[in-house]
Image (cartoon, rainbow, N blue to C red; front, side):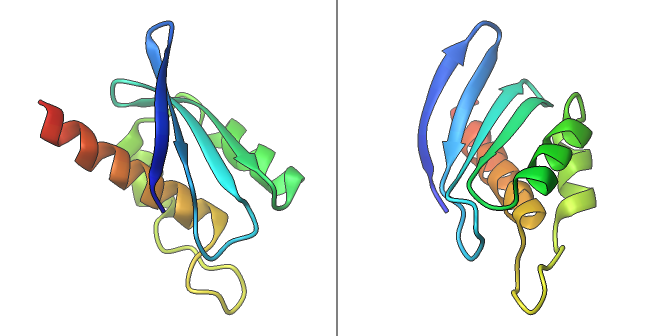
Length: 99
């Protein structure tokens, strides 16, 4: 997984991540400080991905990570929710080095 690019969109920053080991090919995050504003999964199960996005909207990043990290999809070692948690961990690590 890697950050592909980030863009400013109003107050929030938009980040794109390339997940691994899941059906989704990209996760697009809008983050404002320590809050998730919006999440969009590209590819994968549309209904579940939309549901995850709606549920985490407005949540603190640490809360999303705590709730989703380690969730597995079948026999896979990861899942789309887990990859979202991994993306947010990567976002946090990149922002800590900028401060």
